[in-house]
Image (tube, rainbow, N blue to C red; front, side):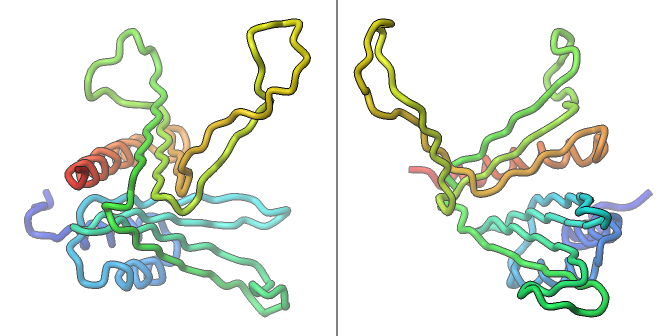
Length: 201
């Protein structure tokens, strides 16, 4: 049995990154740079594989909370073309991170899907979770023609719509990622909500 007190959160994060099997040294290096020596709180490691024509592309996302920031890291695998379109030998990967001050996070949206909701109990499992985080860098506007209550009216009432923050979104499911990852995303969302709510007002 592992003594959780004998290892640090960074040790657990490193093990989860290694478990994803996706360039663990590169992913860890990028995250270490972003952390900048700050303590690590809650985190999520999400590995996703997609097909691009006949090639498999891998992507890993790491979310982490420090005492002052939300860290968002992406590592992507690329084929035989560099970012400028020139041909290169072999494959390469890019790793990028973004640090967002916690007081800038103004939206934490959690959508969970549960099976057999009539028998769901507090703390029960979810079969799918979508976590959307907004901090004002990207706003999505959805517009549609405005209308009035008169069905015979043919006047132009302009447009109506909604604006929403949509800087980052992650979707996990029991079927694709496992119950542990789904629970980790829910725990992370709770930690982020707590960290950002304490800075309101």
